[in-house]
Image (cartoon, rainbow, N blue to C red; front, top):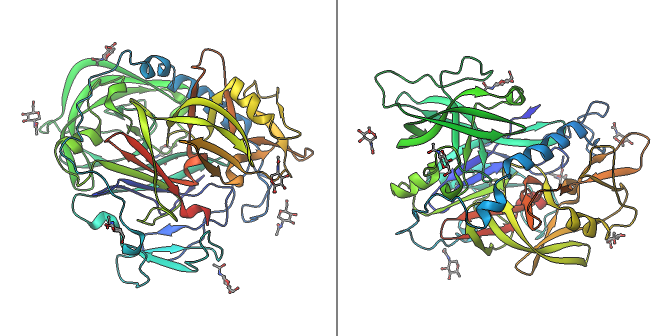
Length: 465
Ligand SMILES: *[C@@H]1O[C@H](CO)[C@@H](O)[C@H](O)[C@H]1NC(C)=O
Ligand SMILES: *[C@@H]1O[C@H](CO)[C@@H](O)[C@H](O)[C@H]1NC(C)=O
Ligand SMILES: *[C@@H]1O[C@H](CO)[C@@H](O)[C@H](O)[C@H]1NC(C)=O
Ligand SMILES: *[C@@H]1O[C@H](CO)[C@@H](O)[C@H](O)[C@H]1NC(C)=O
Ligand SMILES: *[C@@H]1O[C@H](CO)[C@@H](O)[C@H](O)[C@H]1NC(C)=O
Ligand SMILES: *[C@@H]1O[C@H](CO)[C@@H](O)[C@H](O)[C@H]1NC(C)=O
Ligand SMILES: *[C@@H]1O[C@H](CO)[C@@H](O)[C@H](O)[C@H]1NC(C)=O
């Protein structure tokens, strides 16, 4: 099921801002619309028996979806150990050179209440973290500023998980529009080209256009399968801003597990150093290189559109390496009890949940009374009593970042059980024992800003209102 939300992805002067939807489970979250109207966030979509309008309903854990994501995370990060230790990387061209240091705009600049055409309208609930901003907040779309570009995204929710966030990109001089998954956890762009066996739309380059094939083969692992094709170049853009010769994998073979997804291809927003198919600069890097943007930053906010991004200031974390958006994680906590350990976290919009090494998962769930590792889903998942009240946080730079409880709880085991599955999943053997993948479950609570100068920032998202 797809929820057509007001989501925006803004490669802009200051930030590229992805406004994706709140989670299916957080039915009362604010929804942002770009058309000036108001709308409530979608209600929980669960595996069938509960009303989608019942905001108090507990959704059920969808084992099939969750185990599929666990498998795909294992595949996606198969080379992570190598990359994070600096092996097999493409050269880093530092496309951010020459850009000024990024300063977040002040909130007061944006929290306008005047309504007029082109203003973004945001419905909010009555309770806000800072006790203000009741009702509707109107904010000026930042993407209208020069050097910005905006990619409205849709949150694809299926089986009560936010599976992916996608938006329109255009290909070729005729600007063929295709729907593309947006992923900060990988660095290749791939799109089907003349793909007869693909379920979804593919790009048919114009013979008179700029499309060029290098003849080199490319393969990208995606989901639990893979796509393969030929490394190619063409004009690729968002709106009217384009990169003239963008390298991408022109895919002619797509594995079946993509068939039910509403996208044709994928845009990787990690560093080109880890591009595995094209071995070339990413779309965002090429925008920087061509000085198309006013700042070397993009940002991602789930479920909101507030150019202040947040209900508080941005806290920055320096990158450990320019590969994934990788930062140091100091541990996890339940309420005020911490499990401290030094980890590397990859901040990944393309992953729904949070994945940690097995020992870390054990130590973390030890902090939750009544929790235990479940065996019935093939390993990796833990249950805890559904009625447990807890604040689960991730720690970066000595600061705790709480996850909205409704996002940590990924569903009740079944009708007869009082146990729910936790959204922190254990990664199996063979996986780097210090790597954490931080997906949308966390990013829905924390507005994230990705700065090419080498840092990731988090600010409390207006989702938490
Ligand atoms: C909503 O779900 C809860 C919990 O399952 C149930 O007790 C309640 O009756 C439901 N309300 C409606 C209006 O369906
Ligand atoms: C934000 O406000 C502070 C204090 O008023 C000011 O010093 C700073 O320059 C402002 N920042 C921006 C980006 O406008
Ligand atoms: C906010 O509270 C007022 C008064 O209690 C109520 O009438 C209104 O419907 C509430 N608005 C929302 C968005 O919940
Ligand atoms: C793109 O590639 C074509 C063919 O190599 C070349 O003629 C053209 O100048 C390139 N455009 C840019 C902007 O680099
Ligand atoms: C992709 O294919 C799926 C399954 O057939 C369909 O539901 C979806 O609308 C298609 N999306 C696009 C953008 O073509
Ligand atoms: C990209 O680099 C990898 C590792 O160096 C290599 O195996 C692969 O063939 C390269 N791909 C292309 C298209 O050049
Ligand atoms: C966490 O704190 C809440 C509120 O104080 C309390 O009700 C709950 O029992 C605590 N949970 C755990 C696991 O300590």
